[in-house]
Length: 86
Image 1 (cartoon, rainbow, N blue to C red):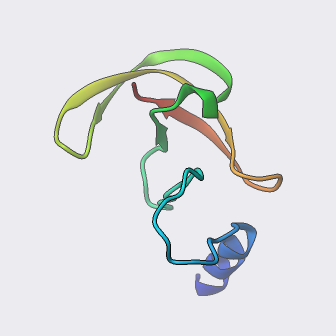
Image 2 (spheres, rainbow, N blue to C red; image 1 turned 135 degrees about the horizontal axis):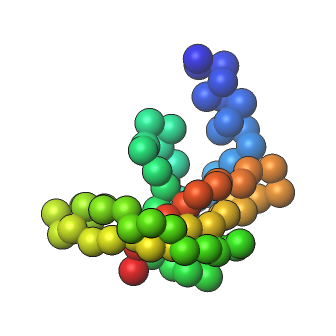
């Protein structure tokens, strides 16, 4: 398992400094997540409608996701069925 994690991490470009977010896109990947989400429709490709999916935001607010698509993190990593949560 540790070897698989290291392989995955080697595919992801990591920031070289500890400075605060400076306008670059940052993704938090959770291999145990039920699904991946984005609030930015511009990140999605091949967008299509989906049956409504109930999502609870980190602040506890419930909402619905009704669109999903692909997100290209880089040339080697593509997330599929990423939900759009406005």
